[in-house]
Image 1 (tube, rainbow, N blue to C red):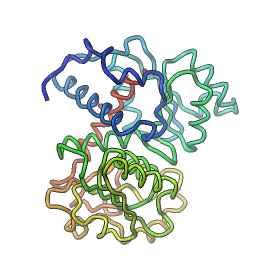
Image 2: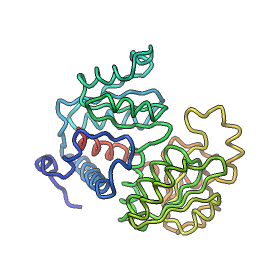
Image 3: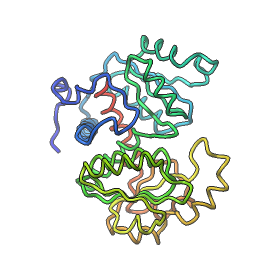
Length: 323
């Protein structure tokens, strides 16, 4: 890909049509629009590697509300805003007046007069939807219990970089039908990937989300398959993805989950069913020896650190497009 001077032509990019929009779910954007975001992510990444400045957000401020612990989300958004010429402001949910009972509608209206966008990482997705309803600035979902759209965009960027395409790529997700799986599957289906999901009984993805993904797959030319058999999901896969078995907020279920997911570890035996040049992905943090073996996650097919880095570039694209 040849270097491009995005800053000079930014006003002419089709992504300007998204200015002021929210990013609460990845499927708020259609397949064509997601590819626009991925192209911008790739260009922004290239510019950074070349040392070329890209600062369309000079003078802009991102308010970052955190109700959940974070490494990648906080650092990538804060650094991303700095690289875009703006400021990322960390705000602990416990330290805001929200933590003392202020209505989220009041917080949304007040912050809309101070900052240019809000990124929130919290528990309830309905909480984020309420924030967006009352705010007059873009709201970006940094993670909820139901969705993790920024992670999914970085995941798709990573697969695209390594495979050179997305349409037709066979993507297997093995493990908990959680927020990461929800966003990954919706985005992959919109972009025409062949998606296979293997979860234990009782830990399936939300049925409404599966139905949406199945419809998106039909429209995008891909496929959607749900199974309880990890081997069936991974057979012939180009990319194998897993996540922790116990997400934040579910710690009290840990012992029960360890037993339920015992047969869903991504290990050498399982990935032997994938294509020889498969990619291994994990959103991190990982529990080596639980959902994945050390040999797989630290092996030659693992792209977990490319994936983590791409959070920065994908989120910079989101910020540039919306703000």
